[in-house]
Image (cartoon, rainbow, N blue to C red; front, side, top):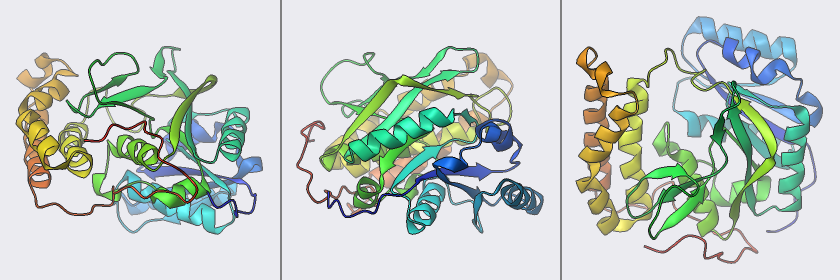
Length: 319
């Protein structure tokens, strides 16, 4: 790390898509502005929703970054982060609009990354009914499966943090380049976590800090959406192509139909008797993932860059 950043406030970045009512009901129930800047990035959905977001930001004194199109979660976060860092923020806190976060928790996350600039940090996250939602996760570089920490076995397990709530010092964020925008939605937080560790940083969960997630608050209905199914299937293979080379990408491509079935099963098989949209989404995502995984090698936006002053941690197995 170069240590030259001027200390400043926290940049709290949230990406909105659609009606901002969820944002106002959850994240904005507490005033986070005393901590720094609250940057609302609106990925365009409709003119009415855009006007509502703009009006909300004006009323609440928030910074608005109004994107001309919906180019995905990662690209939206990157735009909000660039805005916050240009304004002098020394750290970033990425949060979902359906997250409830006490100002004291946000302040503690800020203090953590200022004290440990090489560390990507998340709090423990529970559902509204108090059930655990996140307290650490791992990805298997061998199988391409993800699960809570301690539930996977075998070689090549790497920890990762959810993008629903994570904090980073500006030096680490700039060094790894933020989120890889080519994921659009899902798996970009796995990718970021792996790149941070390959760059010599670390990821950590502050289990003494708590946030509440209204799970599904940003999606309509109680079932997994076709978008969820499609991009989970596609992006697992994008991740493999970015991190595991030709052999690893081929191995996980052969396993892709079974993985698609696992994603579909998360809602139970009975739904598929009356709704075929998830099956079509799984097919689209798998085909798109194969196209990426089997393409000629390229240096993607996911490529790791080592921050100055950080040595390799050895936390991520080479493949």
